Structure formats: structure tokens, C-alpha cells
Amino acid sequence: MSYTLSRAGETIDGASLGEAFTGTSGTWTCAYVSGGPSRAYLAEITPSTTQALAGGDTITFTLNFQEAQNARVELVTWTINGQRVKPNDPKTAYTVAWNDIIAARFRQHVAGCEGDMVMVEAHSELSVHYEKGTGSVQLHILNDAAAVVKQPAAERSSLVLSLDGVSVLPDTYHDLAICTPRLMDVETVWQLENGTEYTETINWLRIGEDLQPVNGPYVMAELRFAGPGPFAFALVSSTSVDLVHGDDVDPDNNYAQSPPLYITMPGGP
Image (cartoon, rainbow, N blue to C red; front, side):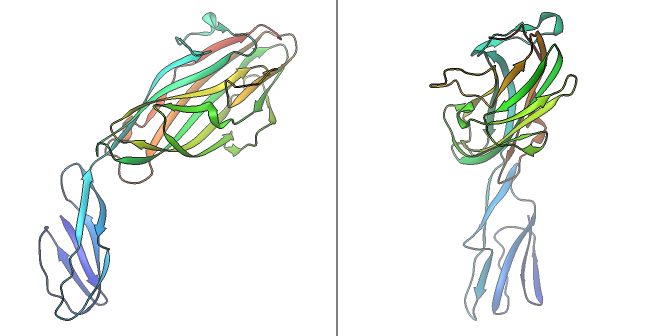
């Protein structure tokens, strides 16, 4: 393992653990360079990266490593009203009705450091493509925090929704133009337990307005219609996960994207 010990005008290069050096009095800093246990990462240097050395005294820097972590995500399924549905094509589009809920489910897991708590940032997206119709359609943004849940339950510290890369406020309306997809992006930060497999459900869309909202189901947005219909849509959902602290040994499995889900709305309520 390579590291350096340094003070003003003096540097010592270390090549292995357990080494002892003699240095002049002053404030010394330990800096990790490379190496260490296989498939592990440096968690911290204790008691501090910087320590004061007085004449005749000894200071000790301890480099603490943890087993490497690997965050991953994979698609589980699309759901309509909580029921699994298979990916389809435009010819076999699912017919949806007023108040139906469209959701995507993903499975998330962080391997390594079993039982430790880790902060994970997730970016989940929904592409809404208004393919054809006989009237205007709008996205009514609700950004309900209860629309994104994990099972088992996990603590969430933030939730930010954007549309086409711009943050949007709840209770705002945004037009959908035919053949011009719009991208909803919800950014969340979670505290997860390493070794536990979580299923995340995102209630992306409600078809039409909920005329009697009491206890949900909660959604990120509603599709609002003006015109006789029918209306046809293609939906694609994706999620990426990243460790807030520490290195991920396999970033290639940090992203998952659904196949398209095709739906049609015959008309009004």
C-alpha cells in the first residue's frame, strides 16, 4: 500500500502497513495514495488525517478499510392498479380507464459491508410519449412524496422532481405535444442497509383526475385530457443508483431500463 506522511518542507513515502518513521516536530498529515486489501476501499484515517508531533512523542495513523460495496438495480415489472403487466407493442396496447394507476417496480441492493447503513442516490425517469390522439393532453404535476416507496421500508432524506431537466412545482400543468416525448425525473436519497434487497415502486401516472382523493393511491402526476379521444401513449421508465460515499466496484449494474409500455385511453370518464 502506498501513502505519504508530510509536514512543511518534509515528506515521507510509505510502501507498507506497520512501518515506523522518525520525523521532526510539527504537524503531520497522512494521505492515502493507492493499494490496500483486495476489493476494499479506504473508509477513514483515525484518529485524524492531521496530527501534531512533539519532541520525544509518537503519533499513529491508522488506515481503516472496508469491504468494497456494489450497488445494483434491476427492473421487476410494470403495474396497472398494482397488477403486473407484461411489456407489449402498439398493436397490443393496454386499454386504461379513468383513475387507473401506472407504476414501475425496480429491485435495489447494495452488497458488501453486510449490515452497515449506506446512503444511496437514485435517479428514476419516465418518458411519456403522446403518440396519437384527437385532443390535447397535459401532465398535472402532483409530486406526492408517498408515490415513491420501498419495501421493506427505508428512510428517505430528499425527493426532487423535474420535467425535461427543470425542477417543477406541484399543481402545475404542462402540455404534451404529439410525437414529442417529455421526461419526468425524480431524484431521491435513501439510507439503506447493506445486504438487504429492496423493491421500489414508483406510482408515475394516474389516468385523469381523482375526483374523490381520500387516501391515495398517490402519484407523481396525472394525465389530463381535453377532447373525445382516443389517446395513445408509449411509456419507458428507468432507474440509476449511486453510492453517496465510497467507491462502487461494479458501476455497470447501476442502471436499469424498462421496455416500452403501450397504453390507450378511449375517452373521458
